Length: 390
Image (tube, rainbow, N blue to C red; front, side):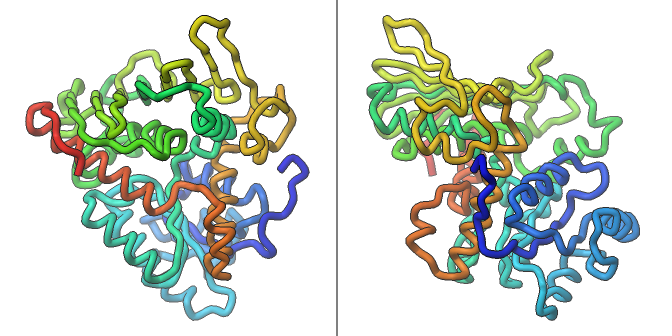
């Protein structure tokens, strides 16, 4: 990708719901989607305040009449246009995802949705069935899953370089909410309110990210049972947790652990994954995304660098600049968005061969994220007991 080749014949006409003025995540979505000319932003319902949303949309260069008061209005109006939208990204609070995603699929649109897709497995399965029946893709923004060294780790594990996998250690534990910052920050306040955030805070907000990285690296490993305990160290957040520990048994006998936290005081981001085999281990940390630690028992540790010719071809495919230069969040998101675009285009053309060769966090990944949170909450609320994974 260093030369910036075109990925699709034409950009996909695209809109956003949410992600308006001051939204960090909205800016990330737009930067990622527009980087490779695979999407063209043509419409939006950016804000619950219609005037503010219209002003923001026009500041992005959109036609005023395509800056809508609501997603319902947008889906209806765009369906009547010859040049109407083909896809929509949802960057709104968690409690709205299910309704907007369902409405988008019913309107015949492809969807890119923030996680979680919804609050229950029942809702998630309904969305999956709707996506399949309507022949539309749903992409989920597990952003760092698009980083090249995640592909490198997947290839090394598949090649048997770690031996038999025994332990998967995961965490996403930052410290920015170690105090009740939501009292002065509306953007954080909804995350700790069950009406908008759903049945969990950090399990769904951060814990599902390294969990999905493990699913990319270890696609054959399935959870058999788990035990979860969760805490509300900032008491006003109860019943939602700001810290949680999840222990998992896999069907192959391996063990997994996820530390999900917003109260790891002093930690900037703290998303890490370490995969431990019988011969060697791999570790990746999103604060140092261009390095993958590879440690063979009895030999000096190695640091594998992004962009180097010794990496697996799948880990070089998405490089945007040569080795030695830093790539991170925006590039990883861009890699996901171009895959979303290819999947949308291939689906519309019914190109099953191209679809079968493409990996991205899809509707199935979204369903599994909701399933994991639901099982964690079930275990924690029963007193931190082992539960069969359902």
